Length: 564
Image 1: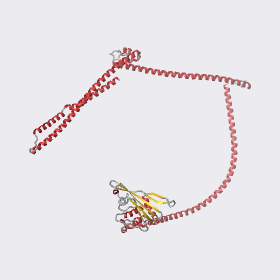
Image 2: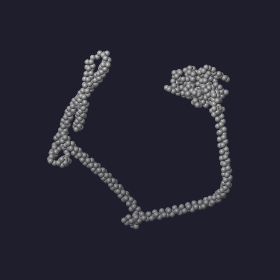
Image 3: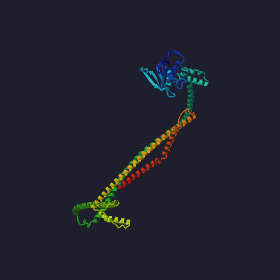
């Protein structure tokens, strides 16, 4: 028989999580719990119910009110633990541990059920075994181990005082509650399943009966087919015996046919050999006729066979000598052929070399023309004296049109493109001296431009300093103007207060007039500075100087590019 032994509670409702666990032992057969209101009697019953069934008490805000309040202990997280030792229906001792956690967030509380533990003792080894389970698994296992339904535990054994009046509820709710307690729904489902199974098997019997009738008709047809099969097998056996007799006759005839075929093949081979021999004889005769037609004279009628053999043996030696001579001539021919190919290769190489030299010549002529054109252009651009030969050729009548003059110059250059080495050296010397002179001029020009740029930069710096001083003066005048205006306002208010007070304060009228004059002078000075034309001319002058600097930089770049 199942029973409850001990209950340990910590962190549940009024049981503080900081204190040690509160252990309650249950005696047999009855345990009475007595205490004042709020001491935890109902909490013990709720803890027993939660430990066995996993059901939280009603009206606890989804478990938030079931755990100790975190605010009362000054913690953000409070853990509650319930341990229950009980005897299962087999008499074995078991312990179930259920844990919960309540977290205090900024404005809300968060309740969480942790995995439970079920401890037992192994009957074979005597060791303690702990198994961790999900909460839903423990909710099913523990009522089964105790041997009492979950509905009985919730609504009868551990019925909460707020739900104790459920027998007085309306009929439908009361029937549903009694069905859950006595598990009558399971029997109703079992009867429905039996009814469905009976209908299923009745339908299956009808199908089997129809199938049996079909099988009976098939059996009758099969018996007829079997009789026909036996008759066919008898006919086949008789036909097989007749075929065996015919096979023996066929074997005898096949042997005779094979003998006849062998004789026919031999006759055919003999005919083929006769035809082949006749062909050989005809070929030999044609060869003999051909040889006789090639001979100057036919010696077979004039000489005997021995003489012909002697002549044939000497003829072979003559043929061998002729063959050797022919071979020597062929070797000489091959040697001459190789020499001709080698000479042809040399000729091709010479032609290629000739083409290459002609191409180099044309390239050299074009380079000479380019050189003369460059010399003429540089001499014209920088007033340099032309080399001796070119100076004579360059004196062309200025009355000739430019195009005709250019054609004459080109024709003259093509006719004589050579220049003496001393002429080229003299021209290079004059070109170097001109280059040195141009570089000197360029450096002087750069120095002057740099000097102008430095002067402009110094003027820009001076103008900027003047602008800064003017702006500082303007800010000072503005500040002084504001202070004077403020002083004027103070004096005006003071004058009004004095005129309204009727002589309660003594202020001289001359001081007020003097302050007003100073404020008026400050305003005139500020207006004069605002209208000053110099203040507006400074940015225009700065832009003009910047444009001059950019112009000088572009001029330097153009001169540098021209020198290159």
